[in-house]
Amino acid sequence: MDDAIVALLIFAAVYVVMVLNLADRTVAVLIGALTMVGLGILSEEQAIEAIHWEAIGLIFGMFVLVAALSDSGFFRWIGLHALKMTKFNFLKIFVVFCGLSAFLAAFMDSITVMIFMASLSIEVCLILKAPPLPIIIAEICSANIGGSATMVGDPPNVIIGTALDMTFIDFATNTGPIALFAFAVNLVVFGLFYRHILENGKDRKVDVQKIMEEHKDLDPFTAIRDLRQMRIALIVFAFTVTLLIMHSVLDLLVAYVAILGAALVLLLGGRGLDHLVDKIDWHTIVFLAGLFVMVGGLEASGILSDFAESLSDISGGNVLLIATIVLWTAGLLSALFDNVPLSAAMVPVIQTISAETGVALNPLAYTLAMGCDVGGNATPIGASANVVGLAVAEKNGISHTWGEYCKVAIPAMIITLLVVNALVLILLF
Image (cartoon, rainbow, N blue to C red; front, side, top):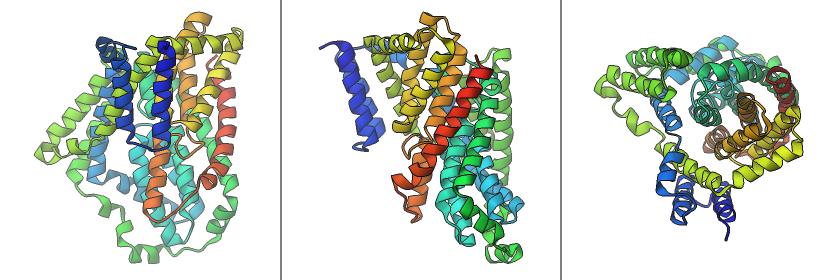
């Protein structure tokens, strides 16, 4: 059987296993990667070379920094400060919490952001006797869009940026403005969908003093578990982000910068922070390594270049049409599948399209990133933030169905992606 067909069947089988949750996704990807190597689709040396070590290093370093912030109580602390600003007005809570989710997700993994934002939202909604699910869904979509603003936000951006040797500034100046507009549009769309809930909450009279007296744990300072650790983690995080912004000028790899930040926070924190290494999401790191090998197998088999040629033929070489096809292909596929493996598989595709048509590669990369990030909002399995945010809700007894999620998220995704499409063509091409 042709290598391309075998590679595609293996990749598709792993995808089905992940989507149907038939096995742990890390185990599924590792088996898929080993099968491709075992069948000779790519050699052991090619498998090692296929792993984007810079992406692995960047994600590892940021995981350590975020774990230090999380362990100190930072996320609950900043969330409670945001809550205090709203004076428990539900409309303001909706806007501020969505904005905070987007902002935090631009600089750290959206999984951590959603664990804390979803938990806090449920706590607040129970006090205000408001339904938590609408705000959690809105926060999920906001986090995914916010993560598209920088190279260290959503995992697809990390994968695309490191694979193509792009910089933090490249993403911030190109996807950043588009993400800001997309967030505003998304917030308005959700506001319209949930206007009856927000209007009821807006008119509800709230005795702030009484709530604070009854719920002492809503005082921001009660969230701080280790003030010294929080200060160290925040200083090191700010230092790391500064170096990420300047890494191209200083001729530093983004992975080196992130690992340097991780080393500093562990060193300055002393022995008390050794346990942070245990809190790193090793499953995700191993999953990405296996995924890169599988994508390397697809690339070696020639199937990705064939797919790229098909997209180029459909576009007829029209630059604007190529950009639109890449955006909507990524967006619609991200709605059905996790956007992390999709982005990894699409990087070689846009490289081939760029080489064959002469379209600049970087604008195609930003377009791909926006498609993966925004498209992932459409379904409960489109992105990691979706899965985690809804899992937190389920854990707290808040059930949901695909229908409840999709009836709002799909229209919001389509409207937002239409706006992104226009902005991409105007600003990038």
